Image (cartoon, rainbow, N blue to C red; front, side, top):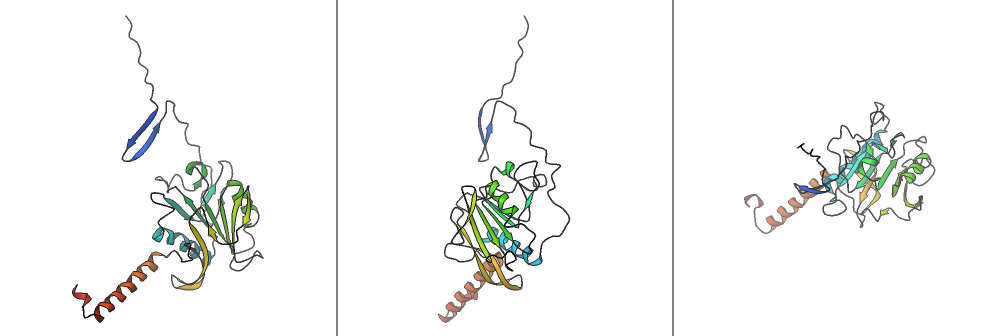
Length: 248
């Protein structure tokens, strides 16, 4: 009597481990696409000094002080990275992008850019900071962001190189961008505004994230300074009441 060969058939279902749900299938998943031919970065310094500093202000403030779009809902904000919508096309390099419900990949040395097929969606917001007339912010880039499906597109043109307003906020409707009457992004829970003040020792006009009440989202340093001033006011109040705060 011959032995019957045993064929292992993977079962369909889910596996929960450490709070993470893994979906299993009865079929082997296709391999990830080869992205080795894509140019995800180069060695050419192309950013204006003011643009680079404002990029960091926009990214640092959210990571320091924004809770995100809701409890348990992560986000990714990044500056000057490639945005790839399809495998065969070159990247669009924007100044700042914000994507909700995603996190930076664990192996970010492999997934070096924002590959839409890896993250599963386009970012919610793209910001362009204009430093010259060659960036195609109102031409090719605006068309591409609309084609990819980026819901909100923001152009900050401090020198008015493009002949429009200093700040223009667009919302995607029926595959075309329409300018918003304000700078609030309803489906994100953030707005943008122009703010005069100092960042890293440089006093200027900056593009900042803000809340519904037009209060800027503070950087880590601004939060620390606010807490220090609050502690000083509390200590002074205690001294007025005859209490030495240093002995508490």
